Amino acid sequence: MSQLAPSATVTPAATYPAIRHGASLLLAFRLENRPVLLIGGGVVASGRLFFLLESGAHVTIVAPLPLDPSIAYRLLSNPEQITHVPRDYQGRSDEIKVENFAMVLTAIDDVEMSREVCHMARERHVPVNVADVPPECDFYFGAQFRRGPLQVMISTQGMGPKIGAIIRDRLAEAIPDDIESAIEGVGELRKDLRKRAPGVGGELGKRRMEWMIKVCEAWPLEDMERFRDQDLRNRILDEGWEKGKVLSPEDVGAETIQERLARWGAGLGDTLRGASVGVVSGAALGAMATYLYLKHAR
Ligand SMILES: C[C@@]1(CC(=O)O)c2cc3[nH]c(cc4nc(cc5[nH]c(cc(n2)[C@H]1CCC(=O)O)[C@@](C)(CC(=O)O)[C@@H]5CCC(=O)O)C(CC(=O)O)=C4CCC(=O)O)c(CCC(=O)O)c3CC(=O)O
Ligand SMILES: NC(=O)C1=CN([C@@H]2O[C@H](COP(=O)(O)OP(=O)(O)OC[C@H]3O[C@@H](n4cnc5c(N)ncnc54)[C@H](O)[C@@H]3O)[C@@H](O)[C@H]2O)C=CC1
Image (cartoon, rainbow, N blue to C red):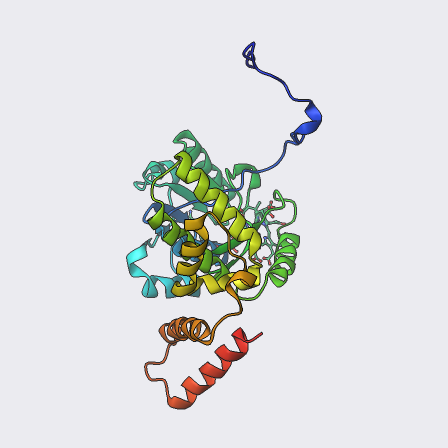
């Protein structure tokens, strides 16, 4: 309870949403290069490992052999991100201490050991997830999908993980195709804007944010991938930002052939970088060009 300052005005309660307890705090946890302890080597641990590797964490896995095949594969494919200790975790007597990690996860079929690990982690204020015992989780995983920079997670507060996965599949279907290009385009535009109007906060920061909000509102999601084109970004900044205006897609006109080719070039580059074959034949290039054409032509 706090004492309101005498000058504070209280707005009627109806103005603000009511607090409904029972929610989790949804966050995007940044783990790049941070150490995480993963105990267990089965199929659930394998799912945890995948998401940890994508986040850039360094994972210490303590689990006896045999490991789930996908974990064995990751040990070979991402050795720099994983340390494997091939034995059972011993709880309090183990020389691997929970306090040396940013996060601790157990995915084992030993509830007593899981409970011990949970207590150890909580004593040291290290966030912990125990896959088989929800009350021993400081945070839950959720059903999720990723499209480039976009990540979506569904939580049902532990009530129904499978229904969470079904809802996730429906949401994924509803997201426009190639949303990653739209987000990348906006990211590039924000980066260029910051070069012209650098710094944090202040009047300039306010103007920058107001302008970005208006740009995002003026452009349909499906068109924002065009911001990946440098010439278009320059135009939007020169004729828009510099003059206190916001250009809409109508203002800049339909995409020019040059812009489209530039975007295709970027797309083709990505495709080639992602290709697992070293040599791409002329026929394959032609097929890729057709694919990109169909993908981008509207
Ligand atoms: C609390 C939580 C803790 C945590 O794990 O963080 C938890 C707990 C438990 N799950 C159990 C069972 C199953 N879990 C799944 C699947 C997933 N479980 C996930 C998350 C969570 N599971 C957290 C809450 C999430 C939320 O709030 O919605 C998902 C979303 C994410 C992920 O794990 O990566 C992933 C789907 C990902 C995907 O499909 O993409 C399936 C289905 C399947 O395998 O296909 C089954 C069998 C069917 C069923 O039981 O529904 C049991 C054993 C129950 C028992 O013994 O009967 C417990 C323990 C308990 O409930 O007591
Ligand atoms: N949260 C979730 O989404 C789900 C949770 N579960 C629960 O999660 C737990 C793990 O599930 P699975 O991976 O399917 O089990 P699993 O039986 O395939 O794997 C268990 C792993 O833990 C290892 N292990 C056991 N004691 C250990 C110790 N002291 N130290 C290190 N490793 C140890 C085993 O060697 C094995 O590799 C189970 O209790 C299961 O009920 C199951 C399905 C989904």
